[in-house]
Amino acid sequence: MPVYDFNCSDHGIFSDWMSYDASRQGAPCPDCGGVCTVLPSIPQISTMSSALRRAESRADASSSEPKVMKRGHLPTCGCNMCKKAAPPTSRRWMLGTC
Image (cartoon, rainbow, N blue to C red):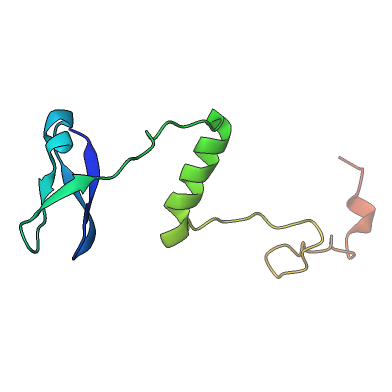
């Protein structure tokens, strides 16, 4: 069943689930119980491209709880994990003799 918006003159706009035929007859206001008229609405049809829709859903999903990402170190990082030990200079005569 679809959701329809109704307007109560005293209490404002509210939404309710009901069939199309029942929505045309009106819905009782949850506060005062008076019969309220249905508001005109536009069907929710997506006109976005699928790539844009996927990007928007990723943005919505990560807005409240961002995903933790690990990045690799760059060659010129300079951190202790990336520093490579220099070859030993005491045995230079061994280079290339294998």
